[in-house]
Image (cartoon, rainbow, N blue to C red; front, side, top):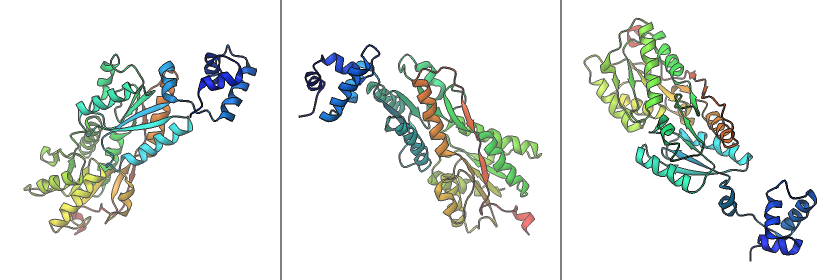
Length: 334
């Protein structure tokens, strides 16, 4: 049978409430009693119940993390960063898949709240700053990724990252540059689209709306979007993609069309997944500090749990990584 607080109380000759207070470091319990109770608890093999403690304190030392899907390779280092800092601070992590669906996201967050998690982190939110209007429904700390308009958020500098990517293509002589967006990532997509437009305007190139098309961040959508763009009477010479998965789909579509990268077309992704450097050819992309994003998010959440209210959104720098999928525009290469 598991050792209970009553067993420790009987061995120590004190009440169960005294044992409970001693184990939770209550200031009214003397140092000597605390030490004696803790020693007995250790010697008797007592294991505290997080759930039982939560019934009293509503603090279960658990963090809920809502993600789009576990199959997204971008999220693996993000979650590793969260788990590393959570573990160092005595917290466990629960994962929930929201599948880019607003109602599903609300259900997952509701389930976390009902399980009395201490706080929640959301990646790929379809609600974004709408959580400000849900504070009465979910009165606990919530941190978001890539939503710089939300007060408790950690983001990559998506705008500057996009500017670096498109400027790189412009410097190579490209003027017909396509952008394949992600309709499910509103805030990050808006920043990347803004950076794309800004660089084109600064280079004196009019943005052709036919060169901006929607995707969903998957290889399949990259294949489809590239096929549509190649069918234009004046197809692009370069593709700036919302993420690396889209870029890999684009490269596959170009191969199917008998085109070589980067001789015929250039491609830039965003994220710098582990796979990007090993792809054929290795992918030019914008690196997000993904592991660090996860660490910053959990540290922000822990600060909120501890009662800090002076926090500001954090934006981490992006970095262009030039590999082998970008080259001079075809007219310059001849």
